[in-house]
Length: 321
Image (cartoon, rainbow, N blue to C red):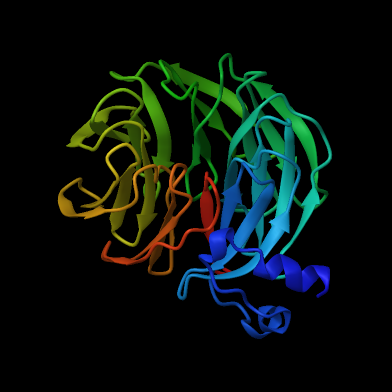
């Protein structure tokens, strides 16, 4: 058996069906979920529509977060190693990014497709990555342990939470994508966790690191316009068309809300399913404790939850846009 075939069959505990190497090319641009297996130094590529394993993409140690930064590329942050990796979702291959960081956490992609921004909690920085060159080109001191990060869909501003239970949030002007500029910092009424712009960019949803609440801010005025009940903290958010999906890994729930905050549905998912990603009518949420990947449809109805790793830290959906 060659190494390529072996890797496609190396499923955890036999819980997944392997896909023959030739099928990888045949799948074309079907959606693929990329899942970080931080205890096993790889990213698992999963067909979310069947739950089948496509490949285990070997990386350096501790792949924690992963974010789609173009229609084809995803960026992996290795927090313990202080490094970044780019994963090609078509070839299912990984390559390292040049340049060291302290503790890279999360990423947001500029809509121009050339630049991405990565938070470094150890150095208190937001790092600018040139995707075309695969290297770090600038570092901005934000004055605290930067973690979750959100960018508006027009590429004008970033909001960054300074910590997993952040007392402060900072905003940066990124209209010049390679030269972000710190413009404001403020204190939310709770310790903040995730920071995500809603479709259209007018509002920002902020989850809590210590309370069962989510706040909706007006992005221009910085004022709170809605308070929403939520599951156990910390919560995470992804958006679909006219809907927000809010996970609570502590409770093992995913809630679907209208963009005005009204609750539409609550669905049980495996406990430990903290992070969440959504695209083209699919939702995925990996479980850090169960090692599963919960897959749901756009109505937040569960489809499957295959076990993909010992611990599944983060996931992103790649659909080729």
